[in-house]
Image (cartoon, rainbow, N blue to C red):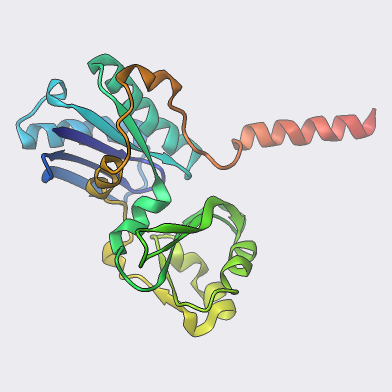
Length: 237
């Protein structure tokens, strides 16, 4: 079975092709380029390297979020378009759990983290010793709010993600020696890991592609501004 994996949930871009449990080709970059112009060329490159075409695919795994609203939407749109055209199933996987899977099978709690601006983060925490069982649900949190949920645990917490450095001083000030930093070598999403997690889920029917929706965990900024404007108007009426 041949899978394509796509992760565009944040600044990094990760794509991979896996055939029968073997990675054929993958690409990951951490350059601030618009995924709308970079994702499809990257996918085309790995198909060329694997000597395959999209018609060879049996399923697609895609990062469903949370993360950048635009980034998540681009990856999901590409995945849905390909899946519908090829009449193959699409499986969504948490972008945060995909990161955590890079260091699964350790005795600590794993906290995946992405910057969401204004001292907010997209984050989730998982049990590294128990098949990534959820400890803190994927969500959009203030950094202080996330740390208050984590400070009560008695176990060390490994933080993973290329945005962790932005908050490391704050993390240490609250958690002290309980806070551990994952090596930078595992900070970026791995599209083969994404596929591996997708394979552990039940494969949906190909026609279910239209029902697939991203998991943003927050409303878009434009929508938030509109709601704020409506509330201000209501106060003044």
